[in-house]
Image (tube, rainbow, N blue to C red; front, side):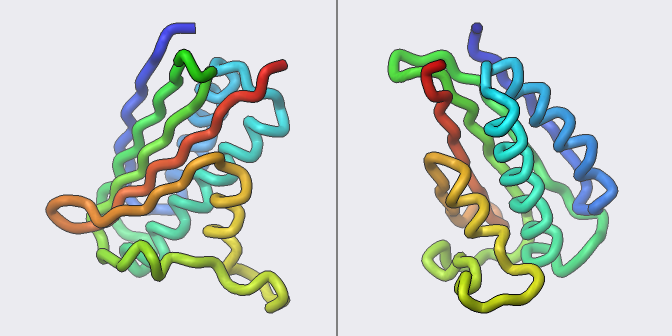
Length: 142
């Protein structure tokens, strides 16, 4: 597998999420991930985008979200590296946390899901406003 990068630009509308999930699934499968991991990666991206729409932009609208999918064939193993960049509200990365798991109610688990299924997760304020989320999932040797 060669390194491959795919850039996607969407509007912050929930109707865009299914197409992104399909592209993430295609890239994760091409990177050699098994079905369970492919589904987890797609779920993490879906949750991250839902958080951008809900919290970064305050709801569905026509604001830009940029996504970069990178399949990496490296000396430390194969991985998929996903960057999500929005231009919404900036927040202190240390304040990005899911709700307590003991608090049983719908919603609020996106950050927990992302941090559980991905190997590396980094939130940073982006230059020019908004936030950037970088997630990496390393492929386990089969």
